[in-house]
Length: 310
Ligand code: CP
Image (cartoon, rainbow, N blue to C red; front, side, top):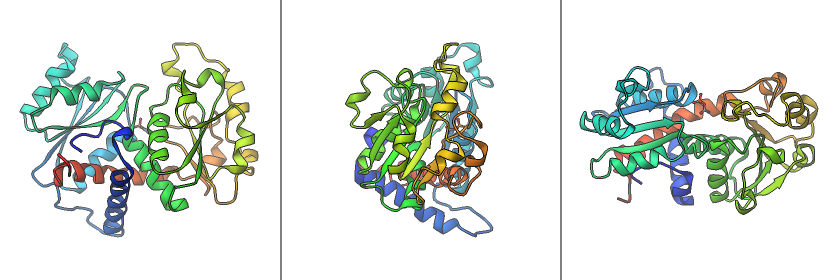
C-alpha cells in the first residue's frame, strides 16, 4: 500500500493489521508523560486541507508529531492556491520540497486519486482525508477501532448507519470497511437522503429507525450536510429530527451493549440529542482519541514499512 485512498483498497488482513497496529500504539503510549516515538524521524508529512476540518486535521498533525515526523500544514487560504495555482502544481511543489506524504482533504470527489496519479514516480504517498461525497477512509478505520474496543470482533455484528447517507463520505468508507470485516450494515435514511444504486451496496436499507434499533449492535449517526444540499432540504430539519434523531427514548430501544457513534461535527438536537451524545453509551470522544492512533498506524504503514507490498 503506497497510498490510502479508499477503504475498498483494504483487504481484511490489511485492515486488521492497521487496527492491530493502532491498538498497539495506543497501549504503548497509554499513561506516558512524553508521548513521542522516534519511528518517523526524518520524514516529512504535509497536510493539505481545501475544506474545513477540526478532528481530521488536528489528529493527523498529532499523529505525525507523536511519531517524530516533521509535519507541515498547508491550507488553501494561506498558500499559492489563493493565487490560482492548480492542485497538480501545488502537489508537485510539495513533493519537490521533500514531502514524503501528502494528506489531502478536498471538496471534489476523486481529488486524492488524481493527486496519487500526478505524484506517481515521485515517492510521495497520498492519504485521503475526505474527498467530497466520496470517501473518508481513516474515519472508517477509527470507527472500526472504536467498535472493536466496545464490541470485540466485528464479524456478524449489525451496524446501523443513520441519516444523510447521500452526502456522506463517512458512510461510503464505513460500508466498504465494515463489510470487509464481516459486519452486517443497515442504512437507515429517508428515501431523499439515499444515493441511487444503494441496493447494490451489499447492505440492508430501511426507512424506519425505530424498527432497526432493537437488533443493532451499534448505530452511527451522520450529520445532515446542509452545505451540500444547495438550499433544498427535505424532509425539513424538524421532520428529520422527529423521524431520525437519536433521542433518549430511542436510546432505550437499543440493546444494553449497543454503542452510539458520531463522526462529528455533531448537530446537537438534530441527528442526536445532547443527553445521548453525552451519555456513557456514546463513544464520540473515544472515536477522536482513536483517530490519532489509527492515523499513526496509517503513517507508520506508509512511511516506516515502505507500504509493505510495493
Ligand atoms: N469527522 C471529521 O472528518 O471531522 P472534521 O471535519 O472535523 O475533520
